[in-house]
Image (cartoon, rainbow, N blue to C red; front, side, top):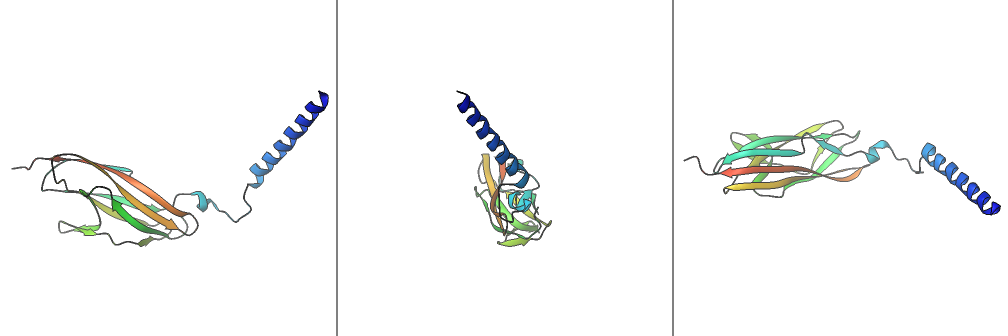
Length: 156
Protein backbone atom coordinates (compact mmCIF):
# COMPACT_ATOMS: atom_id res chain seq x y z
CA UNK A 1 0.00 0.00 0.00
CA UNK A 2 2.88 2.34 0.84
CA UNK A 3 4.49 1.80 -2.60
CA UNK A 4 1.29 2.80 -4.42
CA UNK A 5 1.03 5.94 -2.32
CA UNK A 6 4.68 6.91 -3.05
CA UNK A 7 4.20 6.33 -6.79
CA UNK A 8 1.03 8.42 -6.75
CA UNK A 9 2.82 11.23 -4.89
CA UNK A 10 5.76 11.10 -7.30
CA UNK A 11 3.45 11.17 -10.33
CA UNK A 12 1.52 14.10 -8.84
CA UNK A 13 4.76 15.99 -8.21
CA UNK A 14 5.93 15.43 -11.80
CA UNK A 15 2.59 16.65 -13.16
CA UNK A 16 2.81 19.73 -10.95
CA UNK A 17 6.28 20.64 -12.29
CA UNK A 18 5.21 20.06 -15.91
CA UNK A 19 2.12 22.23 -15.41
CA UNK A 20 4.18 24.99 -13.80
CA UNK A 21 6.64 24.86 -16.69
CA UNK A 22 3.84 25.26 -19.20
CA UNK A 23 2.43 28.22 -17.32
CA UNK A 24 5.81 29.96 -17.10
CA UNK A 25 7.24 28.99 -20.47
CA UNK A 26 4.08 28.61 -22.52
CA UNK A 27 3.06 25.60 -24.53
CA UNK A 28 4.21 26.73 -27.95
CA UNK A 29 7.64 26.54 -29.49
CA UNK A 30 6.84 28.86 -32.41
CA UNK A 31 7.06 32.65 -32.63
CA UNK A 32 3.42 33.32 -31.68
CA UNK A 33 2.50 36.83 -30.64
CA UNK A 34 -0.57 38.19 -28.95
CA UNK A 35 -1.79 39.27 -32.41
CA UNK A 36 -2.25 35.58 -33.18
CA UNK A 37 -4.99 35.41 -30.56
CA UNK A 38 -6.64 38.82 -30.95
CA UNK A 39 -9.58 39.54 -33.22
CA UNK A 40 -8.68 41.17 -36.53
CA UNK A 41 -11.30 43.89 -36.26
CA UNK A 42 -13.92 45.27 -33.94
CA UNK A 43 -17.26 46.76 -34.91
CA UNK A 44 -18.46 50.08 -33.46
CA UNK A 45 -21.78 48.35 -32.69
CA UNK A 46 -22.98 44.78 -32.93
CA UNK A 47 -26.68 45.49 -33.53
CA UNK A 48 -28.76 48.08 -35.39
CA UNK A 49 -32.46 48.71 -34.81
CA UNK A 50 -33.84 50.88 -37.61
CA UNK A 51 -37.19 51.26 -35.87
CA UNK A 52 -40.37 51.85 -37.87
CA UNK A 53 -39.87 53.03 -41.45
CA UNK A 54 -42.71 53.71 -43.93
CA UNK A 55 -42.69 51.76 -47.19
CA UNK A 56 -41.09 53.54 -50.16
CA UNK A 57 -38.68 55.32 -47.80
CA UNK A 58 -35.38 54.27 -46.27
CA UNK A 59 -33.05 54.96 -43.38
CA UNK A 60 -29.25 54.87 -43.48
CA UNK A 61 -27.09 54.09 -40.43
CA UNK A 62 -23.32 53.68 -40.14
CA UNK A 63 -21.07 51.04 -38.64
CA UNK A 64 -17.32 51.51 -38.25
CA UNK A 65 -14.87 48.64 -38.68
CA UNK A 66 -11.66 49.22 -36.70
CA UNK A 67 -8.41 47.29 -37.27
CA UNK A 68 -7.01 46.17 -33.91
CA UNK A 69 -3.80 44.65 -35.23
CA UNK A 70 -0.33 46.01 -35.93
CA UNK A 71 -0.63 44.88 -39.55
CA UNK A 72 -3.01 45.37 -42.45
CA UNK A 73 -6.36 43.59 -42.35
CA UNK A 74 -8.14 42.78 -45.60
CA UNK A 75 -11.92 42.88 -45.64
CA UNK A 76 -12.71 40.15 -48.16
CA UNK A 77 -16.53 40.26 -48.18
CA UNK A 78 -19.37 42.25 -46.64
CA UNK A 79 -22.84 40.82 -47.25
CA UNK A 80 -26.38 41.15 -45.97
CA UNK A 81 -28.54 38.13 -45.18
CA UNK A 82 -31.75 40.00 -46.06
CA UNK A 83 -32.19 42.11 -49.21
CA UNK A 84 -34.13 44.85 -47.37
CA UNK A 85 -30.86 45.68 -45.60
CA UNK A 86 -28.25 46.97 -48.04
CA UNK A 87 -24.57 47.66 -47.43
CA UNK A 88 -22.81 50.53 -49.17
CA UNK A 89 -19.41 52.14 -49.31
CA UNK A 90 -20.75 55.65 -49.08
CA UNK A 91 -23.99 57.64 -49.13
CA UNK A 92 -24.41 60.85 -51.13
CA UNK A 93 -27.24 62.72 -52.82
CA UNK A 94 -29.84 60.34 -51.43
CA UNK A 95 -28.08 57.32 -52.94
CA UNK A 96 -26.31 54.39 -51.30
CA UNK A 97 -23.28 53.47 -53.40
CA UNK A 98 -21.91 49.95 -53.68
CA UNK A 99 -19.14 48.87 -51.34
CA UNK A 100 -16.13 47.71 -53.32
CA UNK A 101 -14.41 44.68 -51.80
CA UNK A 102 -11.84 43.54 -51.02
CA UNK A 103 -10.33 46.54 -49.27
CA UNK A 104 -7.54 46.98 -46.74
CA UNK A 105 -7.61 48.70 -43.37
CA UNK A 106 -4.19 49.81 -42.11
CA UNK A 107 -3.01 49.14 -38.54
CA UNK A 108 -5.20 51.01 -36.03
CA UNK A 109 -7.21 52.35 -38.98
CA UNK A 110 -10.96 52.31 -39.56
CA UNK A 111 -13.54 52.21 -42.35
CA UNK A 112 -17.18 53.26 -42.22
CA UNK A 113 -19.91 51.10 -43.74
CA UNK A 114 -23.31 52.52 -44.64
CA UNK A 115 -26.24 50.20 -43.99
CA UNK A 116 -29.66 51.03 -45.37
CA UNK A 117 -33.08 49.67 -44.43
CA UNK A 118 -35.43 49.63 -47.43
CA UNK A 119 -38.64 47.90 -46.29
CA UNK A 120 -40.56 46.40 -49.22
CA UNK A 121 -43.60 45.23 -47.23
CA UNK A 122 -45.32 45.84 -43.92
CA UNK A 123 -43.98 43.88 -40.97
CA UNK A 124 -40.89 43.01 -38.99
CA UNK A 125 -37.58 42.37 -40.71
CA UNK A 126 -34.39 40.87 -39.31
CA UNK A 127 -31.04 40.13 -40.86
CA UNK A 128 -27.30 40.33 -40.41
CA UNK A 129 -24.38 42.05 -42.03
CA UNK A 130 -21.58 39.52 -42.35
CA UNK A 131 -18.01 40.92 -42.44
CA UNK A 132 -15.28 38.48 -43.48
CA UNK A 133 -11.70 39.61 -42.84
CA UNK A 134 -8.23 38.13 -42.94
CA UNK A 135 -4.75 39.03 -41.76
CA UNK A 136 -1.38 37.39 -42.20
CA UNK A 137 -0.85 36.40 -38.56
CA UNK A 138 -4.39 36.08 -37.18
CA UNK A 139 -5.99 34.40 -40.17
CA UNK A 140 -9.66 34.50 -41.12
CA UNK A 141 -12.40 36.06 -39.01
CA UNK A 142 -16.14 36.58 -39.42
CA UNK A 143 -17.96 39.38 -37.60
CA UNK A 144 -21.71 39.98 -37.51
CA UNK A 145 -23.97 42.98 -37.02
CA UNK A 146 -27.57 42.05 -36.15
CA UNK A 147 -30.22 44.11 -37.95
CA UNK A 148 -33.91 44.72 -37.38
CA UNK A 149 -36.55 47.10 -38.59
CA UNK A 150 -40.29 47.42 -39.14
CA UNK A 151 -41.96 48.32 -42.43
CA UNK A 152 -45.01 50.57 -41.96
CA UNK A 153 -47.79 51.36 -44.45
CA UNK A 154 -47.17 54.23 -46.89
CA UNK A 155 -47.55 57.73 -45.47
CA UNK A 156 -50.39 58.53 -47.90
